[in-house]
Length: 189
Image (cartoon, rainbow, N blue to C red; front, top):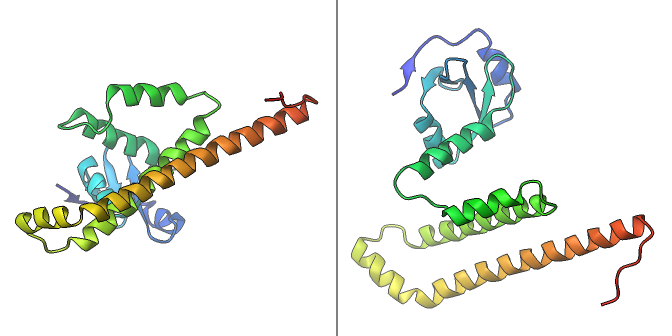
């Protein structure tokens, strides 16, 4: 639950520093989160709900102004993973960890980001097409839409595959540029 309190003195300046449409949350040393838009203290669960509602949220350290958004989002993910049904298997988490410090780290991050974005767009299209359906109607809809779903998933898979090929091509090009920079020739093959 949020409790109304008076706004901290520096609240006005953080509103002016915020990008248009961003919801600024300040994190205080006592681990409390303060929503500058509503002038209330909020919980991590409420920050999660803001994200779920599509709000653009930025979390800043109240004292230093440092951006803490990533750490708060990771904290939300950690709590979700520790709760009920985790999204990532241990194998997936281990593989993600293996990419840190690897030459492919940047590519992997971009690849995952694009895939999540495509999947989100797919989910939105499905939601738009199924508005107002009861569970029984949803079952019938899914049975009737199976070819369409296969087509959507096929498009998703094809886009994912194309991104992977682009990533490989970009890596090959960068390797060739690096070899050229060192005066080495690309091995014949």
